[in-house]
Image 1 (cartoon, one colour):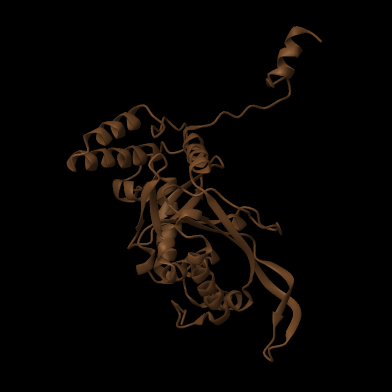
Image 2: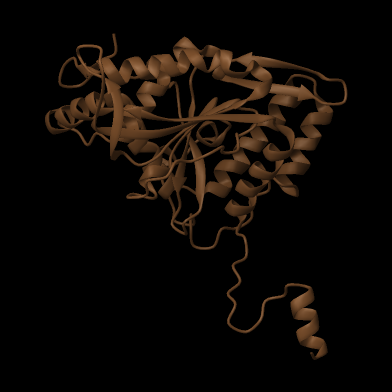
Length: 318
């Protein structure tokens, strides 16, 4: 074995025929999230398959009659919002100091859903659906469409830089000068610095049509529908990293036709083909384990069972 081949094999260096993909700035930022959260947050997950047959039938009916492009993604976000109303401690930010074993949980009034959007190069980046608890199904759909459109016409480097600068100003105004200086350095040189993203978001956009710093700031929870990215796959997602300081995320897979054991109208155990949705719930174990997740799951199951059309623009969850 020659010296070059020895070094290539030992150091796992790329050789002829290999393809090397270097991380762009958005990928660097997302990877920083994942690495940081994986080493600092004791996350746990609960995964199950839900019978959504009635929900699916109601969705198809409304989709054909509502007069606007309604996605199943929006249906599930609405269900998530209803579940969070029953489990408010999941809609929170956690701040923890490991050395002093002290910290706090800030339970948020508003539900801002961080939703990963696929970029032109295949990378994903989360943008926020703001104040979701105040919105009807139609309004949720409109805002989802709006942020996706803004994402594709925004210089995300500038949007993220504006968010970092806003934090620095806020720290300075509240007398937290060390944090303000740190944010300034972070925005200019550190992990938060978003370098030029060649060809992705360099298209000019009117200010009113661009993402705001609030759109790229940390949401309060995360919703990810990986089923839209991998249609036809019958598997189930397992634990996904949380977006610190968030403590909860919900992921959904592809709607599937599966044999499913259920109780029929007579209360008897039966077997039949149902519409089944794989759901994965990831949560920070420090908030109280499953005690806070169970009420959320119960609300989802109730919605899947009694979800029905209320009028042409809305569903009835009660």
